[in-house]
Image (cartoon, rainbow, N blue to C red; front, side):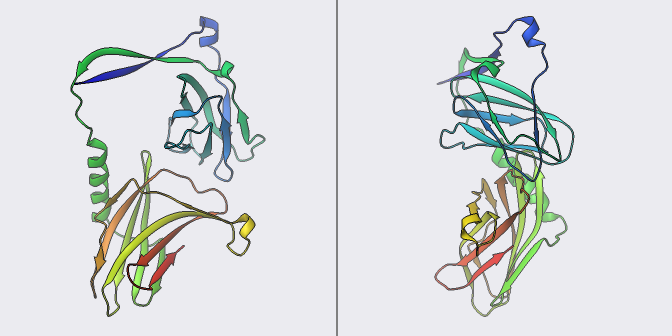
Length: 259
């Protein structure tokens, strides 16, 4: 038996404070806006998909990065490690006058309090994984396009679609083998790349870990092709950033990089 905990937000403010207007934070798709909190971030949620708030979910971190694409205004709700709750209005703005926000404890709108309501056996949720499978299948059945293609030594790597859905980005990919040797896959990695490799001081290449890989093949036989999908955490490419796919052969020398 495990304990179900329902999180209740308790606001320790008087009526005047509770009714005051929330502060507004502006962001765009060309620059990262950094939010520094007094305690490590435990959870951060935006109201609409045109705003993306990223933070380290695996290692405690005091700051998160905000990006936005043009669209309707939204809000950001953040909970820190000590249970303090912070809320802000989010708006897109072409020109940003402020890129760093240092948030104090005084800006908290309240705290959360765990209430033990009842004890029931908890079944491990599978709905998220099932949704990834279902939506990936839907994309694979739809018509294919072409965003980026790389051909080398009879192997073709193609990014056909890039679809934003909820808190994820779906990539539809295809590998085709027109060579005379089976292509065994060592890895296919997705990176966010910023800057020019020749200028090492300004060059960054960050691996994006996939949340789920749908129908990812191990080997592409001679004369065959295979379409599959990658599910990645949602991100927005900033100005000057690009997506890069790197495919390497296992036990061989063939390597393709699609940009």
